[in-house]
Length: 111
Image (cartoon, rainbow, N blue to C red):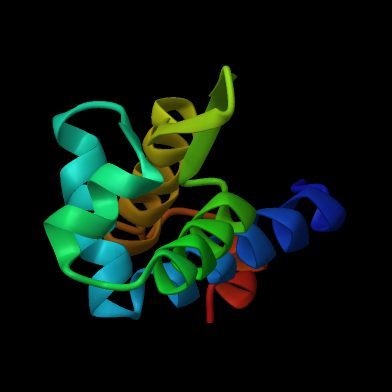
């Protein structure tokens, strides 16, 4: 039997990722960070957006767990959180390729 609290947590985390990726500029940021670590100024130049806009997008991506940062002097260096991205892809695959033999509990939670 599946622990329903764990399942609810997984679904809520997936929802944060879906919402974060719903905006095109956030998907562009994910693309550029997939190429390597970047600071806000570098992302601003790539996307031709204001620093405030990029910072807001990065905040959403951080809260979704897709992006993390490290501090280097006065800069924040952003990168993809590969572990969380891999977990999201794993759960998405599980959702998309759902097996018919799974217990009815699992079918209900993935409505």
